[in-house]
Amino acid sequence: MKKFLPLLALLFASSFISAQPTVIFTDDFESYNTTETIPAQTSNWGTWTGSTTNGEASFVSTTQAHSPTKSMKVISGNDMVYNFGGLTTGQWRTDFWMFVPTGKIGYVNMMHVFGSKWAFEIHFEGGVLTLDNGEETTHTYPENTWFHVTFDVNLDEDEAILDLDGTQLSAWPYSNLAAGGTWATPKLDVIDFYCDAATWEFYIDDFTFSNTVPPLVPPTIVISTDLINTVGADPVVLPIGNSGEEVLNFVTFAKYADPSVNGTLADGQMGYDGDNASAVGYGSSFVAYVASRMKNDITSAHVGQQIVSVDVFINDAPAGDGTITVYVWEKGGFIDPGTTTVLAEKTITPTVESWNTVTLTTPVTITGDEIWVGYKITVPVAVAGTSGYSIGVDDQPNVPKANYIKSGIAWGEWTGFSSTGNGNYSIRANVAGLGWPTWLTITPELSEVYGEDSDNLTLDFNTTGLASGTYNATAVVGCNDKTSEWNNIPVALTIGTGIDNTTKIGVMTYPNPATENLNVVADVNINSIAIYSITGQIVSKFNVNSTSTIINVSEMASGIYVMEITAGNSVVNSKFIVK
Image 1: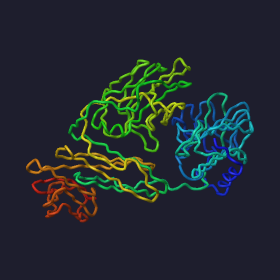
Image 2: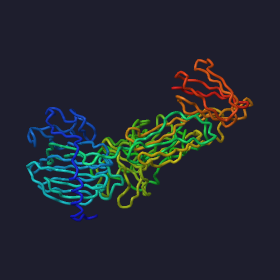
Image 3: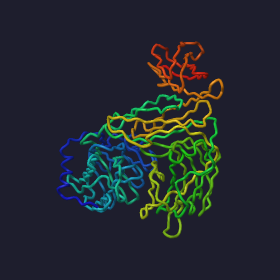
Image 4: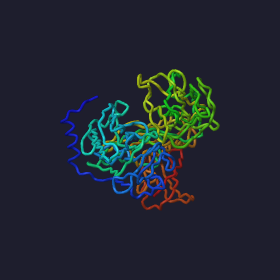
């Protein structure tokens, strides 16, 4: 662990002191009544699980106060969270007054990622403050009296400072993890005030969150989600821009709608694990959700097939009623991966030390989108070398971003055993069916756009073996723009057949909807175009004699129109919208 020289620590301090903080949020707890929990009275404070009524939520108290009469009292079971909002740039200050009664214990932590990546933890016990930021350091604090705590976090320079009553105690890289190592994407996510047992109790007052240097403008994606009509003859270039200042990170993939056309896939299996070789246990019993995040790199090979059953390896018997519930979920966010809608679930009593095959009541269709497969289990208390290790894992190298566990409201990534870096959850999805044809490729699959810059996505189409008709897909762009994490661009591939029923042609119209001009492109020479209203009345008709043309629609009324395109011996109808 890197040691800081006194001069460097002074430089850290000066970078914060030189700037005047701008207050983002402050709370002296005077506005809350004493008969309801604080989260029940405001959205500014939350709890670990989001509950506002159970033992996690704190009340205000008049027993102690820094100013003037009330403070937040944190007692056994309380777990109070303030959400910073997942900040990644800027310089930030969090300060508050704290009171730890004699004989009691206080605790606070900050997280890079809520529920999974602890930046640092601080215990206050018997006048000794223990800071764990990857290595433990101890300092003193005054018992049974109010003292002032300040955390300065410089996300731009990866610096953190702990100050107590105006004296700097420690400075370190904020990217450190309390468990050791570093986090590649340091983030100011939440601060957590927690009490574990009856011997823990403390008070918080005059809480303030401010910035000393404002953050960069967050990444903001600029991309059209208008329908793309194509015949597949030529690639389509789709611009992607970033009007923010921070870097926009993005992924792309295709997902499909049912084309009513079968593919040629064989029954198979999805999963990241090898043969089960070990199991994971914990020192306490709790309800956990365990999942394999099956990304497009796996699901794209099984588009149109269905998940008919799930295999999970359960080593030792679950606690509680001894059952597990197997789930298939839709994906959650891009920035904070997780789950949303339950697509399938089934509860069983598992056979221990064995793979368990759970047949789904209703199979789940694979579209190419990310999908999560896993189970809910009451984890027993693990006894070293004997029992309580329920969650089956393999001994293969851990696959990044594929194994997740949740015990509160947030999913956290499990990165394998710390000693080896190996381990993936023993979870597999069994798939069946012939599948659907896949014809859309998007490049790049993973990239970034710098602030106030732009790039291009390329959509390529493989029409080999496709019969005439219209095929629908969605070009999905996931990114770290908090206001638009998932962007869905509909794509329609039209393949036409001539009057001889053998000659295939295709027509692309864009943009759709259109406001001024509508581009029409075909892979053969266009003879003429007729435009009809949705009720069948002809609007206009004209000759083209080219493979492409531009139609001015600015004088047309808003609505849906049908374009009849005659090309050679073929006639293709295509709908378009005028805004």
